[in-house]
Length: 116
Image (cartoon, rainbow, N blue to C red; front, top):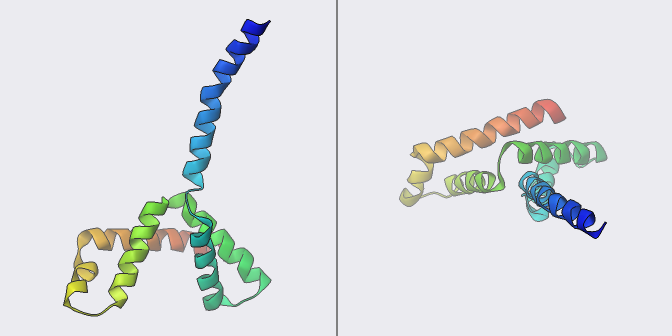
């Protein structure tokens, strides 16, 4: 009986580990990043309970489309574009920067269709 229990436990451990990694992958946005997105969304769209729900839906959907690292890179590019100067021209014209922003915009557009 103990051998059977040990065998079952051994079989379940890899599955539990895989489930955890899937959950981690689907929830890789830190709470603070989600909250920042929701606050900014609500400032833009209205500070109502309905907008809280819609903005939360939006960031959750974006998180299913883009890994957090890609989201962070795209947000960094957008932030750097707001800064003037010659050194920041890279963020306005580089293909890599354009692709990151385009990915974010596509995710935001899909979230808008679904959540708003």
